[in-house]
Image 1 (cartoon, rainbow, N blue to C red):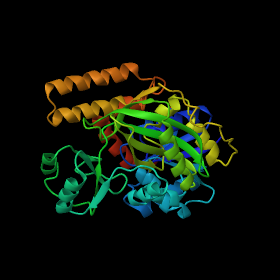
Image 2: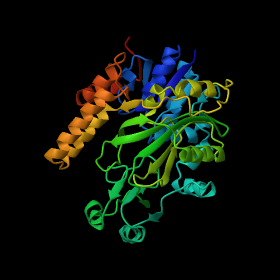
Image 3: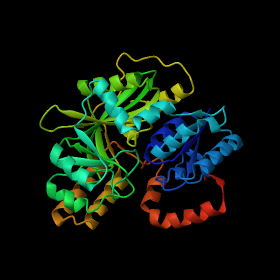
Length: 403
């Protein structure tokens, strides 16, 4: 039995913890902010408060102290910030502790959009035309040069523009409306041609550039009307041969070992695709891949512990197709956001019906489980529990979770 410490927790923590808990491993949660109340899961043996990631030295020192004090065997960084933090400070952790994430050099390449664009060119992986911009004047010229529709996105992972992951521009008038000023926290942004289809995610575990297991999931809806934002509903599909080839080429070129999520945009009216990114961590919707039978959590754990894993003849064949996931809380929050931002009656009714349809037809929710309902219930009660948890964190450093 191993003792795992999950840091920066949110939706993907549940799939990993529930699988490994059933196998007899001990799961602890490190929390320093909103975490979808993962620490309330009955798969979690205990929870420990850690400092905010912005104070990197204090945060990593606290994590190292916890490793010594509680005897953790494995640290699992879940979010982008946790992944980057532990990649930069692995030498500061006890040598006996294993970090369940790709090599720091691989992480650095994956989070660099320019380095990944260059790798895509080398491996003949399509990337929609894009231009970097540093001010409003350059942004206007880039839009005129590339043509609409477009997306504007940050150059770094985990960043936002005016509170959004990306901003979609369908016509010139959108630019004036959605970009009244340059977002001062960004030195540069990327402007890119936008394909009009759905996003396809490849959740995988790899060893030395070879994929051990993988699952293709089509993102059918997000919490934003324009398809940006967080995915709330998706379905496992038969992998497209061209996208399988692209993912395998990039994973091999990176000599990738560990878990990851490769993302591609598609077109409704053609076979065109565009590489988006590889997230060098647990994908946010990995519960869908687990429900489809990809066995990502178990294979990742065996790989992390240095155990031999046989290469599958077809690692993409393990997952079943037609398995649906839904994130009910995220879907509801997105519906509320649209209401507050001017959604009309018709759009609101359609959104509510889609939410109900997602509840009825999904095979798995990203957070809720009938066997482990407390975290999802806490998410719905978040405004009240937030005040209680702030008092709790101020009064104690670590507590044993309730049975």
